[in-house]
Image (cartoon, rainbow, N blue to C red; front, side, top):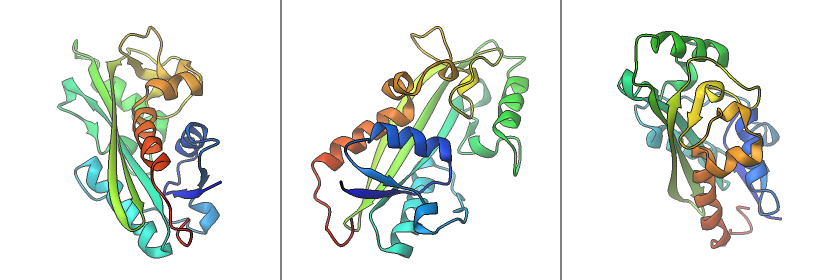
Length: 199
């Protein structure tokens, strides 16, 4: 089976993507290639942050790889937390800290519309390609569910009565922002030949 590196230290993301690509590609983690550092995400767009992560690994190890950046964009908060979603409550904050801050910030707002966006930057055969996935929904008034990670307990996708955290991985992957972006990535990879020395 062909192998490709997913440039992330997030075990939850790794699990989701491995599930989506099982039987098609073997996903190699950063830990498995001996990279344990955090890659800075200094930019104001998901596209730039995803690219800087994939580019860092591709150039350092001379391998095919992809990286993603994901943001939760809430209408009432003018698109926040956006690119700062993972560190919304401050440096070294937990998922729980971020969710608690979001619920606090949303207390005074009736408009609870939000969307998740994922941008994947793939560098393959030394060329870069990007794929985007988006899912719209709203922010719940309280946390529900124990699956998933991040803002999943408070994000309810349009057309569903439950949060992402109440869905199993298969159900979530069918409709989620990351699942949709990965689907585009998969279709591209199916029609792309890897150079053996880079695989």
